[in-house]
Amino acid sequence: MSTSSRDRILDGALELLRAGGTISLESAARHVGLSKPGVMYHFRSKEALMLALVDRVMDGWEDQMTHRLPAPAERVPARERLRAYLDWCLSGEVDEADLVMLTDPRLRGTLKERWIARVTPWVSLPEDLPPEQRGPLLTVRLIADGAWFAGASGILALDPDERARVRAVADALLAG
Image 1 (cartoon, rainbow, N blue to C red):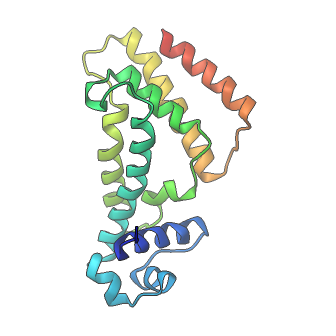
Image 2: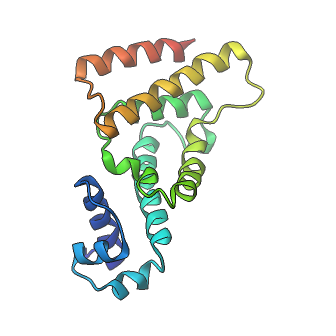
Image 3: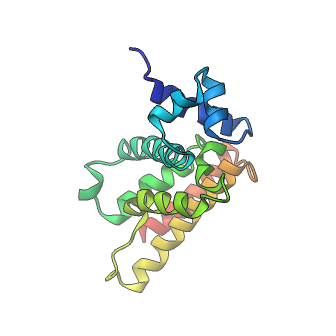
């Protein structure tokens, strides 16, 4: 199966991010051997390219998290969606490209809005959840967020034993 030009551009842009590069229409084009107009055929602006990168990263996350659920996400209680999110965040498979929404200061607000829209269905808690249930679930969400950010940023790489200990604490909170 051949990869479309659009997919090649997105994959190349993510490679650039992982290598510490900056994204522009020109740099993305150069990286995948296309002209800038060739990239602009798929992404009319840098903002469009960056939003597509957020979606690409989140599509990967959602695919991984969905495989951890017993049913479609919209039919699974918040506790099980959080468990899938936690499991993904502690999987050790995150990388710097996951921080795509923070890579461009001029677009950060727009990219962050897209990121929030995509991650909210996985981590939102019902408004009517009693505080004694909400507190532990919110804590699990913060543990997962912290593990994700630490891994994606390279600030704190957890070895498998540490990941297991963090998971045990979070599992105890999820068990309630």
